[in-house]
Amino acid sequence: MKKASLFILSCISALCLSCIGELTDNFPNPPAPPPVGVPTEIGTPIGEAIIQEISPEGGSVELGNGKVKFIFPTGAFSQTTLVKVQPISKTLNHALGVSFELQLIGNSLRKPIEVIYTYSSEDLSGTGPDFVHMAHQDDNRIWKSKRNLEINKSNKTIKGRISYPGRWSFFASAMIQPGKKSLGVSQSQDLEIVGYEYELSLRTDPKYNDLLAPLVPPVRIQNSLVSEWLIDGKKSGIQPERGTLGFLNNNLSLAKYTAPAIVPDQPNIMVSAELFLGKGKFLLLSHLTIENKNRFEVGPYAFSNAEVLIGRAGSVLTINMLKSSNNNYEASLAFLIPGFQGKGTYSFSNLVSGGVEIINPSKSFNSIAYDNNLEPYFNGSIVIQESSNVAGGTIEGTISGTLYERREINNIVSYEPHNFQASFSGTLGN
Image: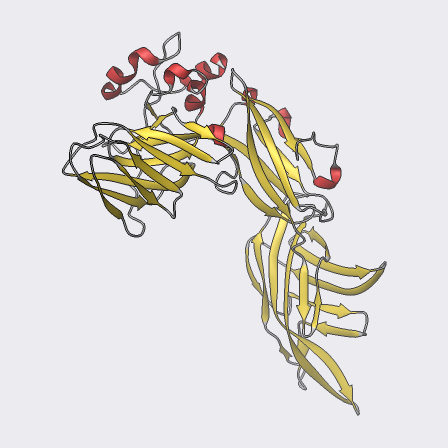
């Protein structure tokens, strides 16, 4: 850990003069300057403030439907005091729960108050309770952290103490990004570990618990701090039906998760990264959900869990969706986009075209039909929401418009319109 800390500290500038008196004697040996904090915006009020009188006997205030609770002990005030707690927008990276501004009207605190954050697993997506800290934003708009929090994992509460009013926030010192994500089958997702490395270097020694350390924007943490990645608590490859993990140049701070080819019976996947911070190992958790996003509907016919094949030849992108049952195809879809340029909307035209064929009963629909003068009439578009030029990368989007069923009765040809929509997510083939 000392090696990691020295690497971080060698890259940051000297301590600002206003912080020297506060921090000089508190850093690891050999001494090194803390980071110069980077100011952020001041949070704006969100919703109504909670305003409540607190007597010298003490009391409590709740915020966010009880997610954050303030407990004022007996003797916190010398006289009855009006307390105002205003929820504010989050301006600190990795802020958790409700950020707030505490104001005391006409009095000051004589004793610290307790602030209790009740979290859910979803609240901590990407991180874990061991990485939760508190931070205060000073008059220079710089956030400064403190580590002396009490964690109760059984009750899912994190308790801190503050001695003065102002803007406060809970935050995560390290996190997997994204902490929560829905993926299609066979889709890949980069998982990056980012954090406040200087903050992590202080957390293992209790003598730094009350140290107010300025915060700078989080960065990808060093490879040497990551000891292992697991899928549902097991090494990658043991359960391929739950997906696999890969690493570029053995860099453990950036993993690539690839979803299985079919949706597993339990579609919720837990990917964890273990950090070694000198005095123990701590887990970060990312929650992934595997779902088949591929479905299409035309008229009264609907098909879900379709197979998707996406290819590219030059500037032409082809999208194919196949629905089979008992090894027999029920329906197929095919569209092509010449002049493909990535994300964007591609309206149907003589070029951007395609159709759907339903095998049983034998019906086919086309995106372009023609009137008696052989003039095309059509409407619709393909919207590409995620795009990649790399083989194995994800291409995701939707298709909607009108398809036409060709009918011929007594040698009279007509086209019956049907509303059409599809959603797809697949990987670009080689």
